[in-house]
Structure formats: structure tokens, C-alpha cells
Image 1 (cartoon, rainbow, N blue to C red):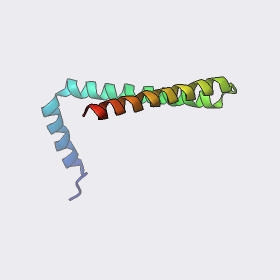
Image 2 (image 1 turned 45 degrees about the vertical axis):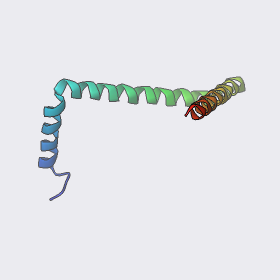
Image 3 (image 1 turned 90 degrees about the vertical axis):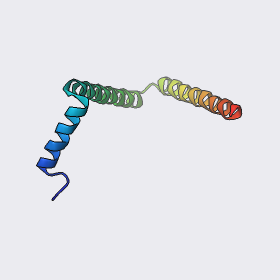
Length: 83
């Protein structure tokens, strides 16, 4: 028998519903949907930013990324020295 057959999937769904309840599954589905929606929106914004002719916006974005990386490095070094 195949592990992904219809009876196995139905039993798995019933077990998940018994453990988490239907309202929790709705919340998880809604959270997953909103996460995918925000990811798509961020991808569209990135495409618009990269396709725009203004190099100033791209330069500011790169500067922000570099500043963030520098902060992360100093935080990691601080945590490493405290250990």
C-alpha cells in the first residue's frame, strides 16, 4: 500500500483534527495564507525596486543591509565573548 493513499490521508486528517481542533487548524491556515501573501508582496516590491531607474534607492537599500550585517556581527561577537 502507498503511504499517501486516500484512506491514510483521511485517517491522518482525523488525528490532526482530534489533536488540534478545527479552530486551531483554521488559525494555522489563516496564518500560513497571510505569510504567503506578505512574501509575495515583498517579492513584488523587490522587483519594482530592482527595475526602477533610481540608483539612489538601491544604494540606500545596500547601505541598510550593510548596517544590519554590521550590527549582527557585533551582537554575535558580544554574545560569543560573554559565553
